[in-house]
Image (tube, rainbow, N blue to C red; front, side, top):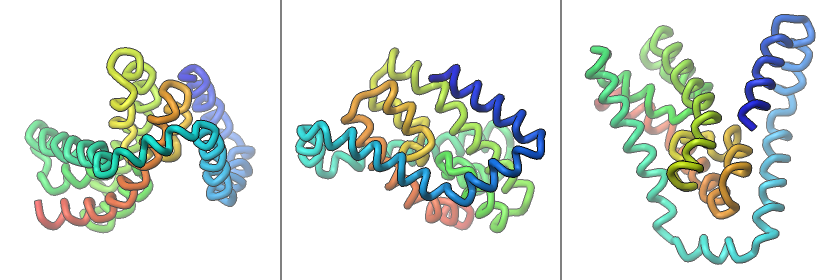
Length: 199
């Protein structure tokens, strides 16, 4: 899966260097919602085939919120540490970290709130979080546990990194991954604004 991800990235770069890249990009942009819905539909089929999992998820109740809460707290703590190491303002560092991997929203929002330079840093750091997640998930699933795989993915655990979850974890973790992604994605806009204005 990792090799395929690297090959896909290399093919995308080559495609982007040609005129064919704009055609592919246009198609993907126009159909991105459909592609995401198709992925979610396929995940739903996988979940539906294991009816015992939904019963087990209902047993978790409030425990489902532990993963997103830990991811948010850990990300903001990472932003605080980066502020201390780099001398960057605390509010900007924590806001960048609170993008939780949602690079498109983080880049634009922080760019509007704190300037283009900080917005560019937010875009790149959250993009790198997503890319590194592709390489970390297989290692984490093998050496730690399946639940820990959700942490590096952050808000992307419901979409772009979901195939990695499906490949390297189990169905129960996939369900938790989707729920985590939905919660984290909903929190990102509030976290960005909160960190910029109140830290």
